[in-house]
Length: 329
Image 1 (cartoon, rainbow, N blue to C red):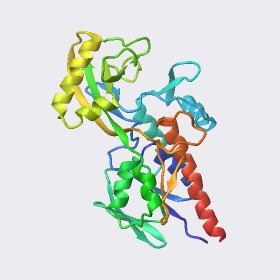
Image 2 (image 1 turned 30 degrees about the horizontal axis):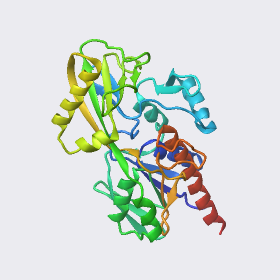
Image 3 (image 1 turned 90 degrees about the horizontal axis):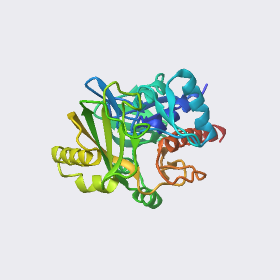
Image 4 (image 1 turned 60 degrees about the vertical axis):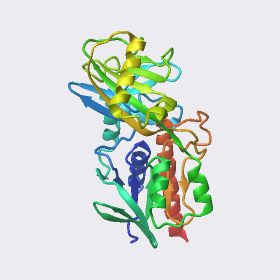
């Protein structure tokens, strides 16, 4: 009987979790290695005193049948609910966006707080090297943001050909700062808790987590634009947070803030995207996937929750095809 193929997935965001779930269903031995203390990636939620604030993806929409089927199941389980909108409803997770990914990943083997420092070719397989452990796989999927993946490859004794470099060099990301502000009193933001028009310069959107019904206390998530975040990236956390607070007061008028925090997303939005749902290195059984890898039929042109899900499903199918072809040779 043929030995079960082992697949390592670096990155526990949506693409990695959906790929892992699909590959496990196909009978592969799968492990996810995540550098953070939780799966989810930009499906991120933070507890602040008695409140809860989403500070990554605010909501998601559905344009594909594949995600629509998932959403029907999540609605039935009570994991998500419709926030607002009719043509393309905005969906949110009932206990914060991170909780949705944790629920999906519940039965997936995940190693948290472990950062892979190198990938070593160990013919016919591969090894991941971290401060924690060396792990051996038949294939590796990297779902970290492309610049981070590329840095990992360059730090590894892998053979990258010219086409690998050309494809990986072209994608850059813009950062996003998110200020998290706990208010003394309730303060409504628009009809649904989202304000993304008519904002002061540098501000992308304001989200009221209490109006989203994910927080029992008034918590605002204030997202800054990529250009603003780039300009302020090296100016220091205290100075940056003070500036965001001043802009917030300018936008809303006087509000009493009782606590504040800053979240820095270095790789928030891809400036360029791949019009393919995944890539494979030319000389190694190493694949890349994530929200910057768009299905050719995706006309949005931007990274989002659904693009991560579809990328994960497509790369899982590609890995399955790869191993079945090897078996048939």
